[in-house]
Amino acid sequence: MRMHLNKKSERGQALLPFALVFVALFGMVGLVLDVGWSYYVGKKAQTAADAAAQAAVAQALIQNGPAATPNCSTLGCQAATSCPASSNLLTACAYGLANGFAPGGEGGQQTVMVAAGGAGTAPGVPNVPVDYWVQVTMTNALPQWFSGFFMSTGFTPSAVATAALRRTNINASLYLLNRASDCFVSALNVGVICGEDFLSLGLNTVNAGGGIYMSSSNGSGIGLPAIAAGTVTGLATVTAPFTYLMGQGGIQNVLGANNWTVTPMNGFPDGDYFSDPFAGLQQPPAPTGLPDHPVPGGLITGSLSASSPTVLPPGNYYATLPLLGTATGTPIVITGNVIFSDGASTPCGGFCNYVFYGGLVTGALATTTFSPGEYFFAGAQPVAGGPGVGLTIGANAVMHDLTPLSGGQVTTNSDAGEIFVFASSQYPGLVLPAAISQTGLSFPDVQAGLMAGVEPQITLHGLNKSSSNLPAALIPYAPVLIWQDRANTTLKYTSNGLLDTSCGGICANILSVPGSQEMILMASQNGGNAGTNLYGTIYGPRGSWLTILGVLPGDTVAGPLQIISGALQMTLNASLNVNPLPNPPSRLVAGLIQ
Image (tube, rainbow, N blue to C red; front, side, top):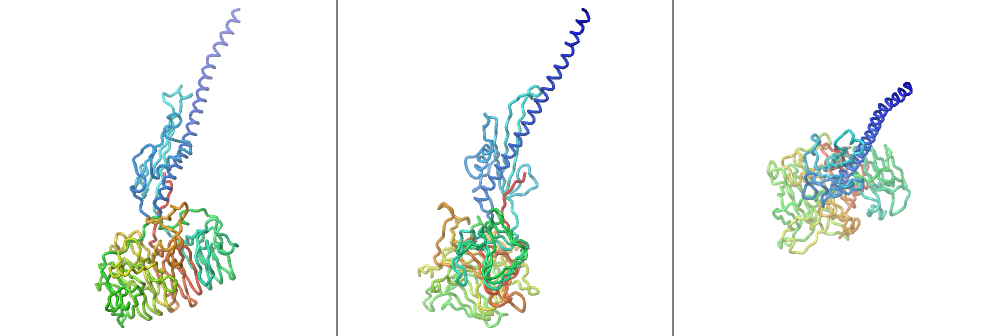
């Protein structure tokens, strides 16, 4: 009997530690479940915060454009606050909600805080300079389950994500912007073509040392007017470290062959490098407050000696009737040798300003020298139904600036450089001389570029932001050499330099003179070297195109040069030999930094 009682007692004693171990084990399993759930919610919060921050800066980039300097007057800036009521920061809240996080969500357990600021550094990311930042913090207080056995408070997983707009250099040699729907009238009577980024007609060579981006998604094998992103008629050799095409963009041969030394690659999605790097940047300001220089008969007679050129001081130049002084609207013709300068050893204190109405033509065998400055070609009268030309260089003439070639090659300039702006008399901020406004003359957009007779010798340098003489208002445009008016394209732009979408899509722009959106660069040669030597960036907006025209084999445009245009058209016997710029322009890109 006593033995039976002892066995019952032993069984009871064994149950007690088992129960204690079971409770502890059950609690530990529960705690693991709580911790695991907290980890899962934390990862979910991080995904939501990343998406929200990236979406907010992506929207900021759309609103601001890649070229303009972000500022808090147009973009959302605030201390850490719950979801805002306006601006690009609303996008952060929308993406947070799409990922399961909202202020007061989950029965009041969630918080979504958004902070944003301008240039400098973002909180918690001290070593990454940015131009604009957005920081999103998300938390989610979890109910206490098994953790209540061990902790007085439950888990509150949180996540912080910081995204920013930062500047990166624009290093490629060719940015060709036209999309599948963008059309233009090709040379040599090919007709209207759409979605064309590169067209070679004749025997042409392109050496683009910095690479090529082509924005058209048109594949090969389709007929006019919607033809491939790149088309070769004749023979073309293209040397570039890469050629990237958006979407299904392709290269095709029509009655010819192409030799691309590195095979072009397509399949790339729409992104930063297929958009206008200068979008969002307003157009260069027009010179104002200049004295008028009427030109009787539209003729300026320069000196006979290139070493003692006639000095042409800064101002507004326009052709007039002799004696009467009435503006005629005809081009200004220069014969002989001239220099645009005020005659000082450092011309105009380092930067001169000129405006030409009606176009400018230099004489054959003459030398024209441009001092550092802004040269504004403010429209010209149409000619035989076509556009007037802004700048025409005479046969075998010399056009150069104050930085000579070195060993036959164009080199970096130490002065402020030049910018040639080709526009119309309606350009914003331009003040017409009284003699022109009284006549009611119209000066539509000119054809941009450097049109010339045979074998000109051209050496020009774009704006140099390292020079203290460059006006502050022009620093954002360095190293631009040629700028084509955004009003001179078949697409409509806003005053802030963005494509106008107020019509529900990209709005069309009706040109007063069809064909004026073509820019022309005349290729030439000099003793086996390039005769057209340019340093800087040539800019034409999407919807425009650039034609490089060579007459004789060996005619070349060369230099540390970057081309941004809707399309590039090589014609006859043209060579383009361009290397990356040492001081390229920059653009904003969006991305996470934390």
